[in-house]
Image (cartoon, chains in turn brown, yellow):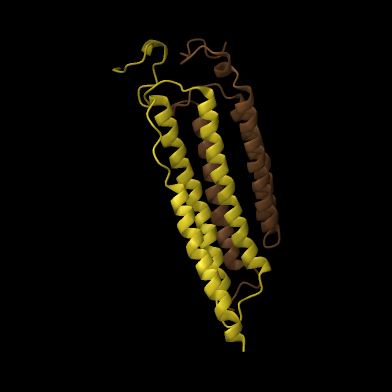
Length: 114
Length: 132
């Protein structure tokens, strides 16, 4: 038993296994991972390396989604690796990727004056 | 450790965050909203890159495409951070059983898209005239 003393707000079956909500969330993670891959593909033209890294990060995002769907710890900040950190990781990834895209937009071939 | 949890001893580290664990369905719904904003942010970044890479330059307007693309990409980064802040606020409110605060994100997005579409319209109107 990983969390023997976790207090439950309500002892109802949907709370322990919120099946459809969990599934919808997993699908949302998959869509987000595909969005990452699409952004990577858009980057390939300017920088093959950046594009490949972002496409690979799409796979990592999908993995985090699987992790999130199985996450059962309380949603509080001070845990070793919980939902809070998964959300933080995705935020960091998206912000970083948009900064890389900003740099690519500035150096893209044919992106000079006019 | 002064809090009002029914079983504080079983949950020693909750004090800093307060409240109790919400219904898992609410946590998942909050997460889906966060993810939807992130997809929006990523789509904006893709749109910005596409403008630079696939749109022909506006004749006679230096950096015309950059005027549209760079704000789009920056907006993507801003939405990403802002949606994280929203997620933490909502999760905290759910834990404490408080009402959810109004989201600031739709306003940011609406203002930015309005401004950018106006800029795009102005650029499109100016470009052919400058080409003559």
